[in-house]
Length: 377
Image (cartoon, rainbow, N blue to C red):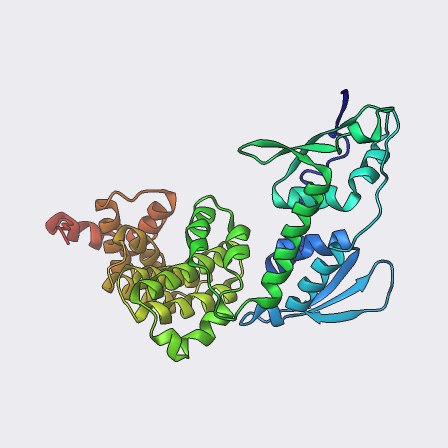
């Protein structure tokens, strides 16, 4: 029984969503605020998002303004409800052609598979390689259903076209149900390592996608008996997650959000103490250094050191703030200790030069008599 194999190179839509965001900061900000899936679903469903009133404490309560298609009438829905309705609209059945011509055009292939599924597939990591279907003229009882070779990244699988559509629908349904039915305290700690990996790779938007909805529920959970009775290791994991999220906001320039998230993380971390809390004070201090709030940064960074934060991470930041506050002796000592710990770099050298230049020959004569010495701590 013969089969036709039709490549889908010209019709698949790999990377379409990423290309929309190239060179468009406002598009990226919208994705960070609403989540990439919501923005992508809106585009596929023909919904134009026009404005967002963001609620950072409870993101799903954020009010989203939008228009349908080419209409000018504006509608508003909470983010959680909009996500559910977008998913519902993408689950609606639609008719498809049941046959293809001998040499189908790209448009015919798109209609046969479904425009919607071609756009949704790459959102879930599915690459459609080719379409296989029976040769024309075969008897109906002998005809196998059309199948699509799907690249899943680590493997490839030949999937009946109807099952592929159902698979994509299931993924869309999961996205919608997760928004509509999740408990406000349903926090999945399994995503924290994924967020750590995203931060390590500089994928800040990915971290926000994973953890951006956590601050609101965690703020409420902290005030409940359920939250107070959580195990120390769980509280430490929550603090670490908020530290990762706060860092992502810092790297993207959302400093106010970062500070709010990091302060919430400190509240969770102080219940258990240890490295997690020290690191949160360091991260919050770093955010203040970037914003030239050096007086506040000094207090936070000193607190980080007192709690056991890695000195090589804190001292360069502390030196910058001391220089900015014209506390040059303290800055010079911080730089010297950082150097003794193996820290180097142009920024540290610039801080050292500013401090020693301000101190002049007096500092050089002092160090000639009293050399720098930093023992084991």
